[in-house]
Length: 145
Image: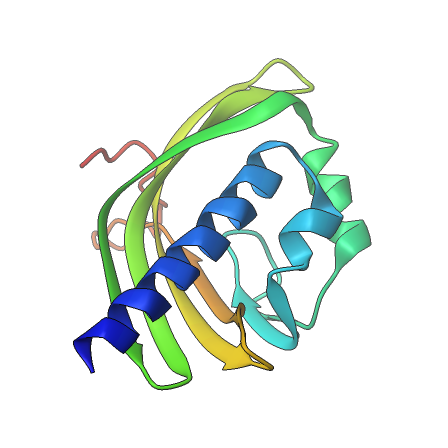
């Protein structure tokens, strides 16, 4: 059993690395190749939920960046069970927006993965930042691990 999971973990990590590369290079088609058609996303941006793939929306967001989108990932955990898995970690997103704004943001992400036709894909994504619990509702964008 452990050999199977190590092979599955390697396949998942390879897929996630390809996906991360596509995101950093602002390749919407490449990034969405790793998502299931029925994916659900709870993104940092509104609305509360996205259903399915939105290549034009993702490309429009990519177009708000000057150059590549940088990043790093820490505190990751991958749990695999049969044809489902979940991954979580802290992600740092860096880069420059087309209006000159410098971005350096840490956020939390959890991915739900499914294996279909022998291929691992992202079927659920949840990204978030903490918010102030002082009644202001202010997003805490300056937190660092």
